[in-house]
Length: 225
Ligand SMILES: *[C@@H]1O[C@H](CO)[C@@H](O)[C@H](O)[C@H]1NC(C)=O
Ligand SMILES: *[C@@H]1O[C@H](CO)[C@@H](O)[C@H](O)[C@H]1NC(C)=O
Ligand SMILES: *[C@@H]1O[C@H](CO)[C@@H](O)[C@H](O)[C@H]1NC(C)=O
Ligand SMILES: *[C@@H]1O[C@H](CO)[C@@H](O)[C@H](O)[C@H]1NC(C)=O
Ligand SMILES: *[C@@H]1O[C@H](CO)[C@@H](O)[C@H](O)[C@H]1NC(C)=O
Ligand SMILES: *[C@@H]1O[C@H](CO)[C@@H](O)[C@H](O)[C@H]1NC(C)=O
Ligand SMILES: *[C@@H]1O[C@H](CO)[C@@H](O)[C@H](O)[C@H]1NC(C)=O
Ligand SMILES: *[C@@H]1O[C@H](CO)[C@@H](O)[C@H](O)[C@H]1NC(C)=O
Image (cartoon, rainbow, N blue to C red; front, side, top):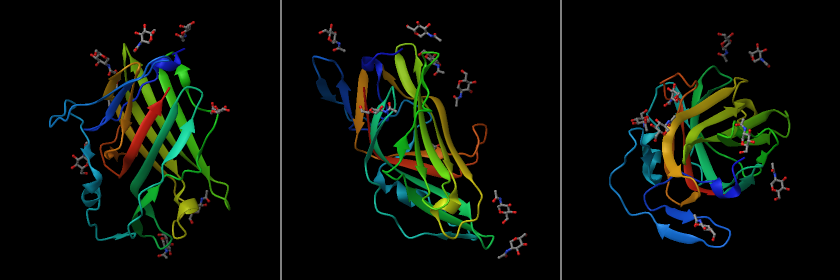
């Protein structure tokens, strides 16, 4: 199993803090400002990204803006994370239309025991769930990280929503939103990132799909051993 020290973090935005975690010492440095991005799958970033996600579509109505999401803290058996996330996606409505909306990951979400920890000593993930009070239907948000040699990287994000439990005008179609990347934000083991800048990822319905059906924006992302 990976030790606590091996838990790292990613989501490095310009200005993120890189911390070396140790039982006895904690050294903190600030990542140098950089105007270049080495990953070809770089993300759109900054809190101004909201202006880029709402391409007008004639059949789409847009919900009013949401406040920034609250910051939550969750732990699985292998990870502890602290972040806020806002989703942007569309769902089908009862009148057969489509509605574009933003939705904040609720901080009441819980991490349950189905997290994958150290599967094949390579995977660490955390699954957050939140259940609709009335329908008892479950929504989930899974973050997976992969170890590759002495580095760690974001593997994927899988979000499963039941819009009907979230919006009164939604029909019962479920929505799956996936971000998939083997090599984004590759970070040395034993490092953690503490980000306070926005990061936005495009989401598709299937791993193999290239159609962008939504985005997830992290306003804060910390990961702790
Ligand atoms: C952690 O502490 C140990 C013992 O003090 C030291 O040998 C090691 O280099 C430290 N690791 C890091 C990443 O600082
Ligand atoms: C996300 O999608 C938008 C348009 O849908 C595109 O302009 C942008 O480059 C995409 N970002 C990434 C990181 O692929
Ligand atoms: C999260 O941490 C708490 C307290 O440290 C612990 O009781 C709980 O079992 C942990 N949850 C998981 C899923 O490991
Ligand atoms: C929605 O579509 C279904 C099937 O096409 C149709 O039967 C139903 O009347 C439509 N509902 C509305 C409100 O248009
Ligand atoms: C994971 O690592 C532990 C300890 O390093 C080892 O005993 C175990 O066989 C490994 N499991 C797999 C599936 O590689
Ligand atoms: C979802 O809604 C459609 C049309 O309203 C209905 O035919 C179907 O049975 C519903 N499915 C579930 C799982 O409720
Ligand atoms: C992830 O890695 C696998 C195997 O190395 C590869 O087949 C797949 O295309 C990669 N996916 C991405 C998004 O890079
Ligand atoms: C793992 O790391 C190696 C060396 O850095 C790199 O060549 C390879 O593409 C990485 N694999 C994945 C799936 O990211």
